[in-house]
Amino acid sequence: MKKGLRKEAVGYMVKALTLAAVALMFAGCGGGGGGGGTTPQAASKVSGVAAVGATITGDVYLTYSGCSVPLHYHTGSDGKYSFDVSGLAGPYMLRVDYTVNGSQQSLFSFAGTQGGTANLNPISNLIVANAASGADLAAAFQAQSGFSGIAANLSLASQNVQATLKAVVAGYPSGVADPLTGTYDPTGALDTFIATVPIVVSGSEVTIAGVGTLNVASDFGSFPALGANTISGMVSSANGRSLAGVKVTAARPGASALTTVTDASGFYYFAASVVSATYTVSVSRQVYQPDISQGGSTTWTQVAFDASSKNVTVSSNSNVVANFGANLPTWQVSGQVLDLYGAPMANVAITVTTLDNSGVQVGTLAPITVVTDASGRYTVRSLPSAFYNIGASFSGYDFRVDSPNNAVFELNGADENIPLTGIPKSLETGGTAGAVG
Image (cartoon, rainbow, N blue to C red; front, top):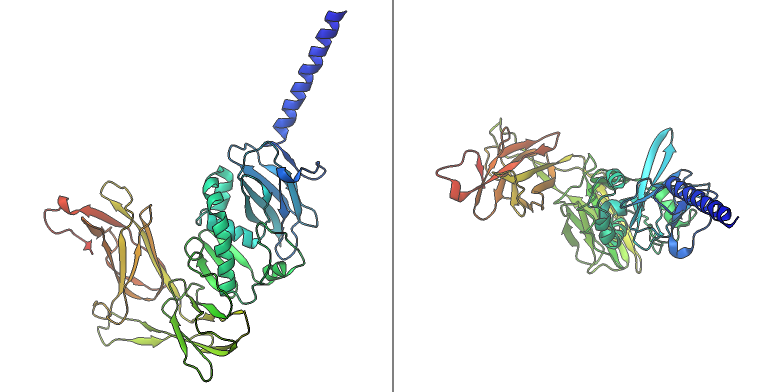
């Protein structure tokens, strides 16, 4: 009798263990989520609100390194979601899928190893994109790759994105909670801002309504955290890209005018000597538009803007924004520098100069120099249509422009990709065909 009871007890234990294993299999990565689930403890959850100016009714997915099937939660009309991550190992990446006018859209968010709040909205999406250095977020989510790097960069990315939006977008609300980790109010000032200023990340670029297109990776670390009594803004070109080298003047009655120049991302700001007053902010820029086929005189064109000046009023402890748009497009030249064995060359100085009608450098326009990154890549942006020369410099090397490109090139209606090859000077016995420098 006792033996029979023991066998029966063992049978029940085996069944229980089997059912538990099946339950874990269907739970995805582990933990839990979704409507009707038990509410997790505060220290063991990732939660937030999904919203795009209105709360999102859609499907939220959570994954992490080693997760085989992402956890799933379907949001209700309040846009809220919550995942039990007890026993799981973060950091965690999140994606919400939703439909707008029949088109499926996705936004991403991120939570660190301790979980916590991770709202899903266009600004949190931009913060994660910046923390990922412009990498493809959909691919990162699918491959569960780069999570440690995103986690390490997330706090600084949040600061940089918020500072940038404050500096370049008129009406960015002050005193709001962190768009990623703060308490999100679907009827508050931040949600109203998101509803009126579309922010769309596409690959390595983000388009901000009323501002233009910025590089997700490189344009968000250069904006200062502006304090009280400042004037700032962006100058963008006709195709939405930034316009560098624009002279910006801020003048008020009875005082000397303040002057600065937009940087490579088209940004300007005034901080020192700005007081509570009404200023007239004006912009001007000339561009050189050579026609080598003419071989004639230098041609300068004064850029036309959407407004030659704008009046702004600075009140106590305020930052005001005045953005301008230009009627000419700008382009970029980019490429990769490799050595003779195909290995990328980092820290190579790439210099682009503007040429006149006879192919000689325009002395009044300063050359633009950038440095290749760890993968040997470079990008020189904000270049109006013109003829240019590209050169490269690195100790102990000469460089050639890879065929069919030339060191002299024209930007006119499209970006250019110009790869280069570095050749050790010790291997050269004579001149190098196509050499640049």
